[in-house]
Length: 136
Image (cartoon, rainbow, N blue to C red; front, side):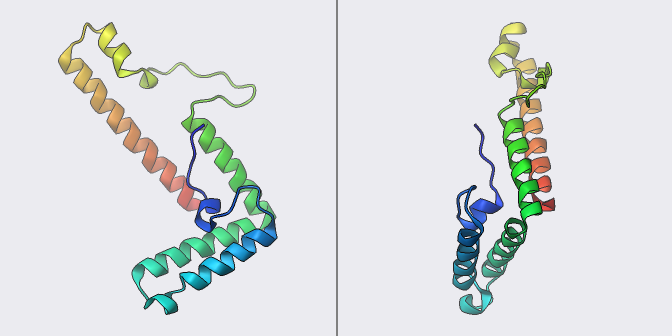
């Protein structure tokens, strides 16, 4: 199963961690990475923002449930597994390079084109996944 980077990873806790463990991890990490302790470095500010956002989401039961649903949906999409009751759509975009080369007689220009399309699709998928994660 594919694994995505989540707020649980930012706080370094398990996905089934109780609220007390999440709060303790937040306190520990926020003290360790606080900008005042790290010379107001940009990296410390960025890390503390990630920690604060993760704690805001995971400390609220409703937002945590939505985040857990987002994780399950994203991992299912990345592993190309259909949800319960869904059929897997037929997609030419998911064909392997080997099958493209085989069906087109090892045509070099065509396989190069298919490879470029595959790379472009992967970049678009990563950007869309990343933007969805930032909105949570």
